[in-house]
Image (cartoon, rainbow, N blue to C red; front, side, top):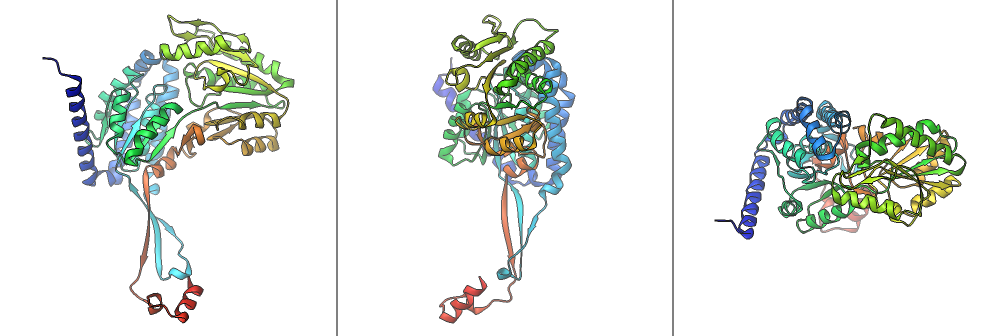
Length: 466
């Protein structure tokens, strides 16, 4: 006898309620607070990606058509680096941070201590489904939390692999993997976690925030947007072109911190475009055809941008609907208000726009939503300082692209439409911890002047002290 949809939904809800009850119980018993437990989980994450590298690469190839080398660079070594960095510094992160007390509070001592939030939900994306699932999990367990990991259903092979492997390498009672579609995500949000960390697109980020609102669940949203690369005339054009093309083509351009478009000074535009095209060809000298896009919906979106562009397609432009591939493409001077320039591209298509000065570049970027990253290429110290200071962005890199994401000592996150909150390294530990302020006083002295009823003399004395 078939089970009705309503019965299945009720069973699923009951299962999620039981899962949350288990995690709450585990957290309440205190096991996740110890330094030793946290280190074991971090060791487990590092071992998982080391020992299962081949399986991870195979899953990523099935989901994204990605090669083994790119899988190692994008998902494996980055995850391992995060876990080992956290393990190395965890003891110092967990220590109380003493604070100086004002004279009016003496005798007293004060400090900030870091406490686990409780149970954290990590919602992973499809584009880097290992790194952007296990990386936030590093922060969650380093902070002493229980966690639920919800991998993306759009990377089903990787999701199934994480569901199978995570319980083998981490505490299976404290860290759970839940697979499913967007409805499962909403059901999870309704449970009322102590924090939610989501990586993905801005529109889905709005839904995550709305789903977390009824339970007042705080959120960290790592989103995206149109991250610009600004190339001034004094830049090393060959290096700039290679670095922009390298990251733009990584994972078929499906990278939230990839350069979404380039603003280049007019005097060097043609030279830069030629070098970008040459770099793209060199990087794919051993490969034919286009680059794989994750699914038909994303393919149609990118193909639509190319069909509608008013710019000059000077390289690539070909698409293959049957294979879901798009050629590495360079479009020169598209209209600023066309879809290619208003939506995040998330594919191997690079618009290059001409500007006549750094001032024009600053105005162009600042008329748009704040990007996740800003990339500045120039030899001039004053110019780079001005561009970095005057353009709001989640992060910035001078004379390279995306490298800030791989530095655990730097916070990684967006601003405005590109995200809320930051993590990585100690910043992730703090983001998923509660910073409890503690003030310790003595019983004596206990001056009577502090207590009512207040006389004019007492108030005068208190005004001088406090």
